[in-house]
Length: 216
Ligand code: FES
Image: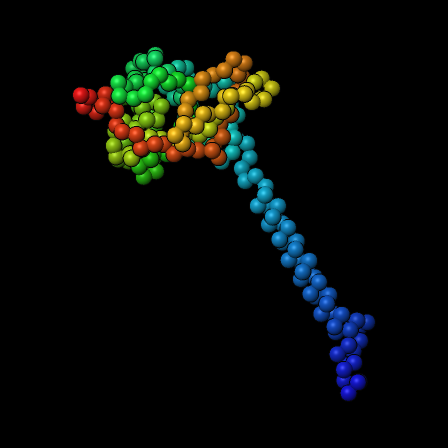
């Protein structure tokens, strides 16, 4: 019987069967740990790089349009840049009597309609954003001015940088009631950084009476 017991460890090509099984188990564990470590590295790595949608876009200040001028289109980042000032109304941008004022600054607006996700466009003939799918309209700052969109356009967080691309303090989009508000261009700004990984959903604001023609 002792011979049979020892039989399990019979030498085969220099190693016993038990040693062979240990080696197989060890190799499996090493492979499993390598896969697990690889997955952890992949998981912890930032998913998006600068200049890719889902990451940050750093643009020269020249990219920012003038106050209440036509929006600048950035298809790679899927946003529009606009600069508005409610105290300087013109044919492209008018504030309304039934909204909080004043407000001014730069905004980065997501290019997807809040109704069913179509890509809307700036319509120069009408000085507003219009969606070709079901006719929603938005003002230059992304505010919903005509149905069926249920809410205003989403916005991305932005920040101004100096000539060395260092963030200028207190220029990160302020968040009020869960939505990004405009940022005025600060002294010394040379670049603007738009973070397309930081998006706030446009609020379901009421339709402005100046645009519906139903002011009291
Ligand atoms: S998807 Fe834009 S109006 Fe319907």
